[in-house]
Image (cartoon, rainbow, N blue to C red):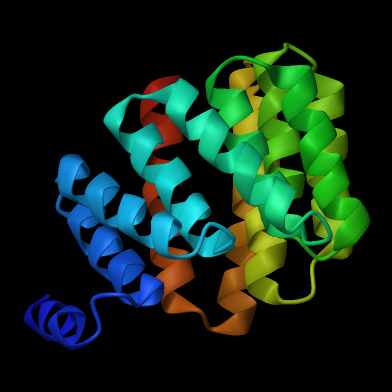
Length: 210
């Protein structure tokens, strides 16, 4: 933080430095300072998209969902041909309970970039929250089909596990988790194996299994 503050002292009109300092303050949960520096960044450069993305997350973290929605809307307005603004906006809409609109924005992100795992994940979660278990599993399957790496495959399978659990199907969730563990074991990914074992244990504990 000292380095960024020193840099800001030398270049007080550099919007990127204000955003870096704001991101630091957001991490410290000092939302007032974060918003202040993002205000400086957007006044210096009203078209600096990254500042509005950060501002959206700061407002969201502070509980100001309306402020977050306005910031993400501006972020999307500035770079409408990129997937991330739609993804950020969709994530907030899901938190606000606007599930159908959230799904529509996630789908727009995927139209722009079919290799955008968090959008598939978001659709699956939205469908689970709407009570659409089959649609949630379908989105997880889409995510798996689009996966390019073993990590992305495990991420898609984790979404399937979560969707099964939300639907109350712990047996199916355990089966997918065990499949994930076998995959990670074949890869020799011990970190992934440890994480999978942890939530396998949690699921067994909840279901009353030893």
